[in-house]
Length: 477
Image: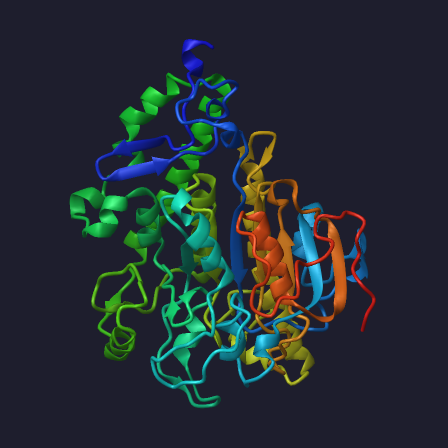
């Protein structure tokens, strides 16, 4: 082994003043022998990561389901942005969350998307989701292997008050992750604070001063980066440079938004009261007394930044479990920035079969699928051993109801991307028996991320056919 190819461990990081940057998987981390300190047989296999992406308000039910099944299927209009990833995704049809069949409105469905349970009806802060979410079950088992047990991201602040139409507190609509039935897990919605959590762990524990704000994390770790480059081979140096360029690109975009379009904090007494009544059980990471209410940041840019941060978190093995919410339950985010749309998301989800509303509803959902496709683009660009980050991951994206107009919890729009280290066989449309438990999918995902369970919520077993390239599903009605 040459001087430039000295082995390093998977836990090697670049350090600087209050800064710690995890690294992508390099060839020098894949031991050809027992030369790397701390290395073992498992070090040669990239870990399986899991990300769950949620969008609110369902989809146009008439334009979601593909025609055909198995490998011989045609992408539906909403799913066409996935055309370039056709061989990387599984479209799963007729999965349902039975725990949400009772109860009107969105909150019952959305809060229980990852728990498979029935939430308790309340207008106060006495939340009860009925169970732990599957991402947090995984984080509780394998989170000790990474610096961040799980990463929860979003773009909209916590919604408070009571939705008098259905008699539920709006707090339910701001969370899909639950570390216990009574404890929702807070999301980070500020890209700068999310970046700090990944790369400036010291800044999370203390407020950064102005001098720290002006210094790039790459400047702070420059000495460590130079020393590392002298220890690794040419291909690893290229991969390291590409990774650091991607970190700089995200950091630059965040800095631009922070200076050009300042986020403003307001002292929202009601939000603060609702959160305090939860007894501190919602960790929002933001220690300011006010809430980050209305960002002037462009919605598409905001979502894109958070998804790029999610990729960096998985790429550096800072975490192996992540969730992202494109919006809160009943979100009426204005999507007039999209051609052909003039109004809010929730408004068009209640389309009343009006063709014009259905068309705009479809455009909005298609935009969400486009963002997911962009995420898959980024993950496929990250090389890991003989494959890519996407090959070693599972990315679930979907909504907790189908038709927003009917609040329909049956046949949920569900896509699973990636290969889970070779334990998924994507490139197919699988059609299951009517109301097959969505939690069967969760049992299968938990197993592939290294947390095997016999049952989860209302599951009846693992979901069939995910690793069988010839499986097409069942014909049962």
